Amino acid sequence: MKNIELTIALIQSSLVWESPEENRTYFSKKIEEIPSNIDVIVLPEMFTTGFTMSPKNIEISEGQITKDWMAEEAKKECRYSRKHPIFEKGTYTNRLFFVHPEGKIEQYDKRHTFTLAGEDKVYQAGRKRLIVDYKGFKICPMICYDLRFPVWARNTEAYDILMYVANWPKPRIKAWDTLLKARAIENMTYCIGVNRIGTDESGYEYSGHSAVYDCLGDQIVYSEKDEILFAILRKEHIESTRQKLRFLEDRDKFTLEV
Image 1 (cartoon, rainbow, N blue to C red):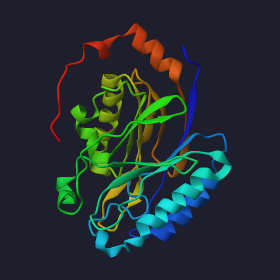
Image 2: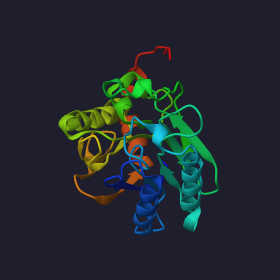
Image 3: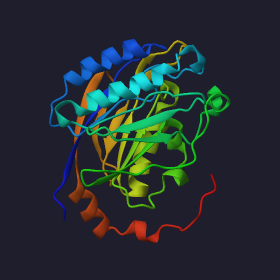
């Protein structure tokens, strides 16, 4: 068994509507509170703007400014930082950036745009999953509405961590809680969900419920308030459970059209 650990910090907070500069300033202060031994920092979906359907209100240059800010935060004290800005350049995309301390940036575009809010009419959907290798762990990041689609998350690459960033509203929070746990169990992986709190400009209320589940569906951390959550993920837990319970070996084989 590999005795490898990954320490993560989840920042659950409210967001300032369509104000990247204010949000960057706020999160810089929150990140300063995090110990230097943390390997991964996770922020909510669209953390610079809130879940706006009017990206034209944001200067296009803000995409690069936020990426530069993330890169600077990531290299502080040789830490790794993972966060999610809103879009960059001409075509609007709900995009997640995975930023390494040495400056390498990997990205994932949200596959399932939220039609109920008209996101599909504003943002271009992604067509490819991302698997990031980091400190001995394979991490599969996804975004909010992706959580409702288990086929897209199916663990065919033997990833160790499935990670969702979100703006998931309070009226449907029971689905968030249930599906995070289900994704952990069915994929035999750690499952992380980072949501926001507060009320946005459209009047939607968010109650957090950021959490981490292990591959048996046991909850490691959980919160409904403005705070930073910490968790330690252990490679041995995944490997020993998968050796004992070989459920992934019996999974259905299929191809996926995107």
